[in-house]
Length: 207
Image (cartoon, rainbow, N blue to C red; front, side, top):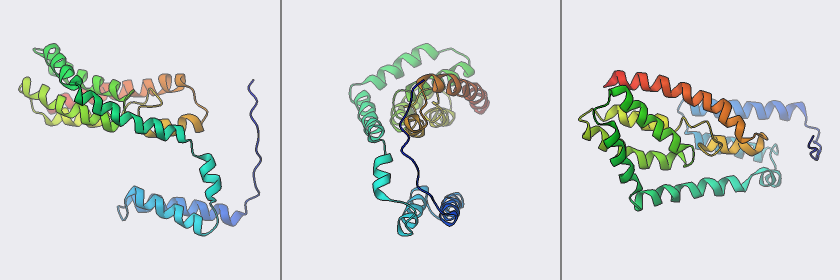
């Protein structure tokens, strides 16, 4: 059994607890109703917590896992490198050659799967940037409507739950929640598989 150091906690008043919960609900309401964007509403909540003394900057800096941010920042250049080296065009050619003459459900399912797998090792934004022109190229080559393909890329790039680096939220909770890679592979893999099957069916119906 691995023992971890317990740093202890400060006694927090009931008022501060309820006030912090109220700020959280306020942020959710502002973002969900569209009054403010998610980023602006979140920053507003943080500022309110700082001004009222419910949040300490020193504690915040200590809790931030800076390695995660460097990891996410490094994913974008990886996507740009694939674009600059022509890797994206090579993928497009390979997909077009494989999918020619295949049923529509195979076409949409393959494109969705490739995008989802790529998003598991590259950031979702970089994956979307790389796969969107590939999807359009494949659709044009097969003389199909490109809209379902773009939708497939959009959803697949955000459905990679099987690795801790597939999406920013996965990465952020990876260290904080003391998770292991196998947790994402088992639970997130099942969820990604289920979403892949459902999305393939729905996207095929659009063609």
